[in-house]
Image (tube, rainbow, N blue to C red; front, side, top):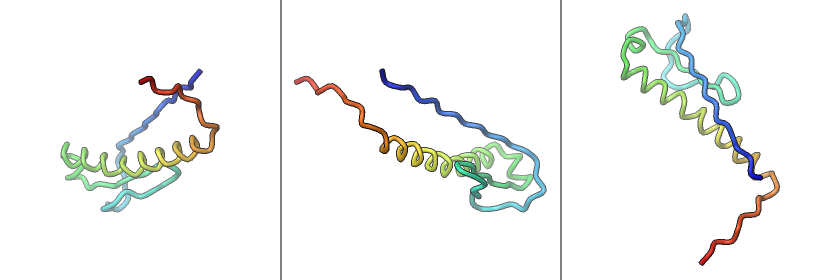
Length: 83
């Protein structure tokens, strides 16, 4: 029987004393953060763009890790396509 896979996402928006940054910073495996200034934090559009910019590298890292692990497993036999 084929296995199922769960995708988990955790997002936090918290106040910070750190300096703002232009690009997401990797803080751990599959973890990225981006610091916004207060004006950006008050803008739904700026927050949305920042979330998307921070999530993109996290998604790519998770996908690369997953596909690498999958490629090391024994291939699953698939039924032949019917003509």
